[in-house]
Amino acid sequence: VAQATLAEVLKRYHTSKCSVVAINSGEGTAAAGGAMKDLWSPYLKYEKSRTSTGSGSGSSSDEKATTAVVSRGQWLSLDDRQRLTNAVNEFVLKVLNPSLERKLAHLNQEVNAQRKGLGNTLKYMFGGRKKKHSSSSSRSSSDLYDLKSIESKIRQAADLSLLMGDYESAAGHYHTAKMDYQHDKQQRLTASASELQGLCTMLSSGPRTGQNYIDAAIHYYQNSSDIARATRAALWAVDAYRDSGLTANAAAMLKRASERESHCTGGSQVRAALLIEQAAYMFLQQGGGKGGGNSHGSGGSSTHGIQLRKYAFHLIMAGHLYHKSKLHRHGLRCYLSARSAFRNKRWFHAEDHINFDLAKNFAHLSSSATNTTTSSSSSSSSN
Image (cartoon, rainbow, N blue to C red; front, side, top):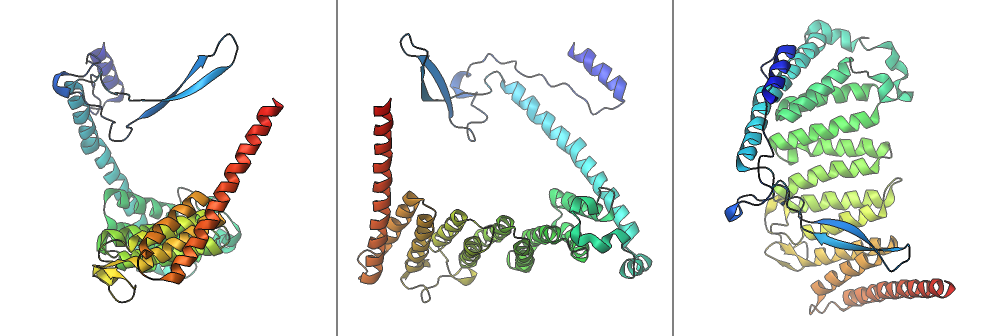
């Protein structure tokens, strides 16, 4: 039946890119020697299932949360798994990649036809923009650019180049799109293009080379009151700096992002606390100084690049922000971690400050627990 269906599909669509993959030919149990392992176990280790059981003759039921280990893919034999692997590899190599390459080549050809050359450049510079762009500051991006516009085609070419791993070409396309968006006063689109240009530049040439583009993206996002996306752009740079061992630069980016979240309209105190806490952990990593080397002078107590005083200071700031957000358990966790860094250092004022904040957090937690107990007792007695 499967072969007949395949023959009908091949006859109808006139293509050789169709195939049949046989699956679920296993016996549903693990093979000898544990060969049939769960394919998804590294990603979905446990699955919580809720079961309802009746209690007595009443209509109510008690829900019990149980943790069950589910073994998936047991009907897939070793031959099935190999066939699936071969089918996916063949699809990617013979269908997906060639299709993306053809699409990208077509987009590049259209962009070059409209933008390259002296005549097109002069036309674009001196009145070549569409008349509807004159009032673009009050129009949305969906109204301004349809899928057939040259700006959308440039952005598609940039996205496909990034997907294919051609970071230099992608950065060039994003730069061109950014200039168009900037000309049309589309700040969020300008920020997005600048952010991705910075990402491509960091992937191709290192984190320092893309910093200016990330900073520009943050500036445009901040002007648009989109602090969450400004934080996202900063996190790209943080990951690049951390992977390159430049943990001091990563900590500085996290600290600035935390300040924006804390003080700018549209920010979040919780995100600010998370960011400054992550900045604190950067000072525990080896090579906390500029350029990835050890730094022993600027941060106080340092041991092989680990700056305990800066670590504790940023944790205290994170605890304060958690406390302002009424997340007292997280604030307590940060204060306790900072307190361990000051132990036996004879920094009495710092220890007094931490102990005072610890007492406040414990008081809030005790008050919350007492209020919860009282309200539960009141509801029980009323019932």
